[in-house]
Structure formats: C-alpha cells, structure tokens
Image (cartoon, rainbow, N blue to C red):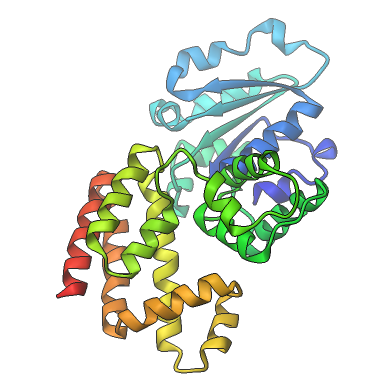
Length: 327
C-alpha cells in the first residue's frame, strides 16, 4: 500500500505490530512520522546500530505498560533484517509488543520474490508492506504552488517549472528551496530569483549539467558533474534527470507530429523548456537517442545489479556517450 494512502484516517487505523516501509521519497516518510508523532509516542531507532539481540531488548517491560501507544521507527533497517535468520524471530517480537508497533524502514527496492521469501514472508504475515512513493509530478507541482499561495506569494509559471526541474521534483529538496525563496524577497518570484537562490550549495545546478549534456558539450558537462558531486548532489539524482530528459526527447523526435502538440502530450508547457527541447532535438538523431536510452539502461543495471559506484559510473557514461555522439 502507498504510505500516503495508509496515513489517511491514521488516528482510526488499527496499526499492526510490525510493518515494513520501502522509501522512495524521504519527504513522504517525514510527513508520515510527523503525523504519527501527533498521535502516539514515537521513538526513532537506527537499524545499522542494532543487532537481533539489542533490537529485541529495546522493548523493556516498563515501556509495555505505558498508556499511550508507542511507535518505533527503525531507519536503515536493511542490515538488521539481513541478520535475522530465524523466521520465528518476528513472531516472538510481535508477542512482546504490547501497546506498541514497529515500522522497519528500508531504502533498497524490494522485489515481489524477496517479499515472498523468509524472513520477510513471516514479517508481513503479522504486518503491512508500505511504499513511501512520491506523488505524481502534477500533484507535486500543485503542492508547491499551493505552498506559495498559502504564504500570500506568487511565482511565475516559468520559475515554478524551472524550480521543479532542478530539484527533480524531489519533495524534500523542494521544501528546502521554497523556504529559501520565501525568505529571499517580497513580491513575485521570477526565474532569475530561483537561479540566484536555489541549490546554492553547488556552484552549478543539475539543470546546467543536463543542458551541457544535451548540447553535446563534454567539457562543460564534466565540470558541472564534478561540481555537483562535490557539493553532495547524489549521482543517482543527476542520472534520474538525464533519463527523464532522454525519454522526453526521444518521444519528441520520434512523434512525427506538430511540436506544440507533442509538447502538450509530454507535459512541457514552460516556454523555457520548450525552447531547450527544440534546440536539443536539432542535435540528436533518433538512432542516437535509441542508443542513449540503451546506455542509460545498462548504466542502471550496472549500479543496481552489480553495485558499481554511481559517481564513477555516471562520469564514465557521460564521457563515453558524448564522445560517441560527437564523433
């Protein structure tokens, strides 16, 4: 179940003793924990600091008889889960959890096959599997726009589109950047305001890198990539933006229809983005874009299946693909 749906009517929900949460969006998890904190006594634990024994001992007898329901959020629970070999462990734990519930939080993507294997199979026989997925892009745009309106502020449509693009629609990043923009100045927020204020921890933005990449400018792309990674922007976040642009550009070039109609179908309404994509479309053939998507798929497999370092893999990909595209 989607965590956003799960927390609707949370005050009336019968929360199961032990639950598993797969996180794709930290903001969705944070909103859930905040809501839990308003209803119950919430305690945050860190799975990478616990083992089977210490985790079991957390639930002391004194805690079991508190009047207010207790909820334990165990972040980074992957190692703890891997350490459990005895399938009866979670059933024993549920018996000890009187007036308390546990949410084990993992960030790695779990497949259906993994969920049907032990010990997760036994765990989920006593609890729920929840996915902290972000809302769709249309909903995220609505959330951000409503935040500005709630504060009595206006943001230009182009500025809002630009803000969403450079943050890759990441709600946690958007929250931070919107807070900065609201403090920056009074009045209507423009594209220039967003460029001056947002993602200021980096010398360049993800958008700068994407623009260099799709203009086939290898030198600039490598400078921007190094700057972003030094500033703490995760390589997989950068990669996600490149993938998004590549798929949109492929759809645009292969559509064979009026560009304005194609833009509308792709949800590209900003004049700024439409101008950029027109420019990119002139630089890439359909065959180049097919090869780009193929290489991005291989890159994703290399990182997720063979655990290749995302930063180094992305750098090699940028070099190899742009050398091919410019040859």
